[in-house]
Amino acid sequence: MSDQTPNATLFLEKRSYRRRRLMDALHLLPIVGVLLWLLPVFWPSGGDHPADPTPVAMSSAVTYVFVVWMLLILAAAVLWWFIGERDRADPGS
Image 1 (tube, rainbow, N blue to C red):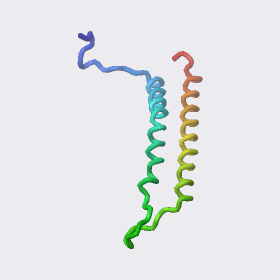
Image 2: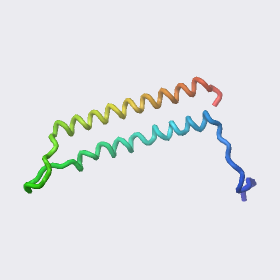
Image 3: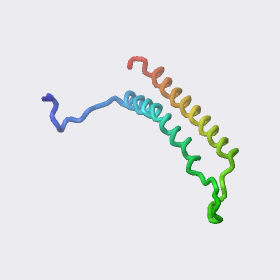
Image 4: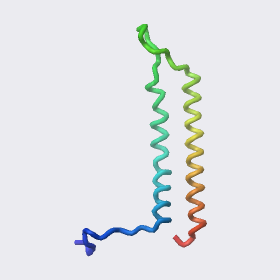
């Protein structure tokens, strides 16, 4: 049995908490990237039926994939920069 009461609140230092949330965001980037890369699968491809929407050009889909890729790289770099700034501001943790 735990020696903490159920009403006790857990105190987390603000810097440590923010650093952990930044690391969580960094860990979620690959999942977000896969979901964004799967979006072109759902774009209309055109069909034989006249009511089908116009298909999306392959060049647009490839451009989309590379733009998402570059944005993921940029987001990872920014998150790492923020994490590094926090480490330099508080070297003790």
